[in-house]
Image (cartoon, rainbow, N blue to C red; front, side, top):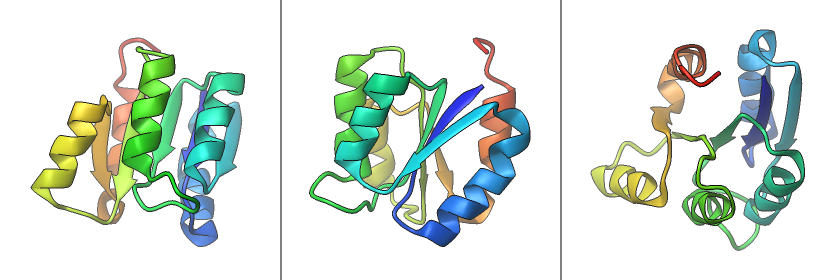
Amino acid sequence: MKLLIVEDSLAVRRLLKSLVEPLANEIDECGDGNDAVALYESGRPDFVLMDIDLLGEMDGIAATRKIKAFERDAKIIIVTNYNKPDLRAEADKAGAFGYVLKENLFDVLELLQTNPNH
């Protein structure tokens, strides 16, 4: 499985990477929305783990929209601290595959492992 981790905090990025590493044979990572779109387009990962707050001018919801516009079948899991209904709705509208709170990171593994298309 090929993954892209998009997270502005290096510590959280390392934590996510250590969590998903056993499932992945390749992991790219960045902390910027524009970089996320470029890395997706060049690498076509199976899943993107996308934070909402990112470096640069593009947040994770906007990056999700751009990636989904490029590749309709992209599987993007929002991984965030924000447990807000309006953000969940925005993520859903943008085409996110899942929405996981950072306090429940093991839910990411569940989404990656139960995906029937992989």
